[in-house]
Image 1 (tube, rainbow, N blue to C red):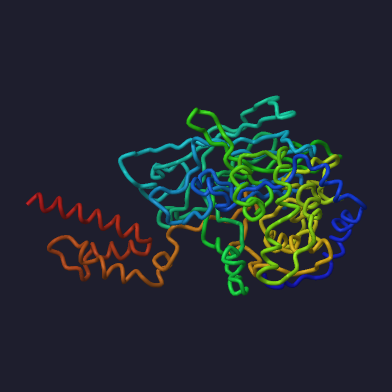
Image 2 (image 1 turned 90 degrees about the vertical axis):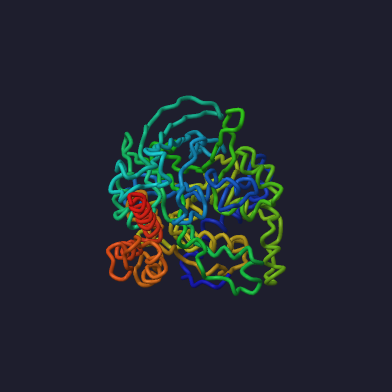
Amino acid sequence: MTPNSRNGVGRAGVATLICGALAAGGLAAAGVTALEPGAAAASSHREAPLISGTPQYDNTDVYAFVSPDKPDTTTIVANWIPFEEPAGGPNFFTFAEDAQYDIHIDNNGDAQGELLYRFTFKTHVKNKKTFLYNTGPVESLDDPDLNITQTYDVDLLKLKDQQLVSRTKIANDVPVAPSNVGKASMPDYAKLRKEAVHHLAGGAMSFAGQADDPFFLDLRVFDLLYGGNLSEVGNDTLKGYNVNSIALQVPTHMITESAEQPIVGIWSTTQRKNAQGHFTQVSRLGMPLVNEVVNPIKDKDKFNASAPWNDGQFLKNVTNPELPKLIEGIYKIPAPAEPRNDLVDVFLKGVEGLNQPPNVRPSEQLRLNTSIEPTAKPKRLGVLDGDNAGFPNGRRLTDDVIDAALQVVEGELVGAKNDLGDAVNKNDKKFEKAFPYVALPTEGSRGPLAKGVSGGNDVRNQLGDALSPAGSSSGGSTDTTLIAASAGAGALGVLLVGAALLWWRRMRERAY
């Protein structure tokens, strides 16, 4: 929660769009009265008791933005499986086969999805007699050395008043980009990523696979709000971790109600097959952080199973939020007066004149005005800094939602100007300039062994003698050289070569 520099341009812009809306006499109060279904919705990193135990089904974040290189299209990125350790084998990170990964689009503001893109996955194993994810260097998605692969289908469901109107399969058996095992296993991962981008009919594209987690923040907020004395800020907790991404880019006219009504609401859900064979919703995410820090424990699992049109049951969590009270208790920053109708207006309806659809039914969704052109140089605070193409008008990968949300929660829009933040202002990796835009995943071979700067000699010294064939000397032996060379590719390479040499030695001993 450190101060952040900001030029003054944004304050005037946001005053016109947001504060002006709040000053429109009675609007906030009317919003609360009309909020029969409407409040919080989002799943995030380990945010609810039940979903934290089943990470394959756990939404982490949703992003939606007008594509910077194709401004007549809209890109949606939804992520699952938090805190993927890149070296977490031998069972790396796959989408669940008994799940429906859904992206919902509300294009008329009624809190019901009119379009639903459903991704379902199948797992394929070439050789079940090995424990290996890959049995050699993988050079393509159909490489025989990629032992475990996944494919996905995409169905487009059109609905009206929550009833199915039509279902169309728009993709079938599309390959998924694998987990990035390491530089030895996948020497050109960018090539694999490129092969996993699939072109759909009508100029749309899809992608599914592993990516660097684009969310940047200091998660030590949970240690008594950054240590209780602001000593725990500035470290990107998610640096080096990956997620599983689903990305969809579609011509904007395919998802909006009309050119006159360009605003869409977007959220993602996961449905999991239960013991009776029926699919049940277990996770949901629209706006970031809502279920994580807005809903109390008693509501978190209920929220993950709910839908936007039933959000009224969570309204008090928004109008009387806990976080400002905690900040006041620890840092003595006065909490804004309640009820927090400013939060209702901005986060449940969209900003009037920017991303609020006409006749909006308040509910928590990520709302995007698709007619706002991309910004050449995005500002990390988005609308708060005068950049109307950014959060909370959708969410770009570069948007600093932690700082923006903190400032709004602490009353930025009701006169309590502040520059609060966690001192993590950008992702550790640069994002791609073309679809699917997310950064390449961190490889499992990261670290001293992979970089070859240290550790290789230590591994050779510790394992060289033990793994040398009987009767050979460790100094200068071909086998020890192989072990040392494999150390440069990571510890798994050392163990595999060593195991092979031990097997060879046993076979040789039996022969004699």
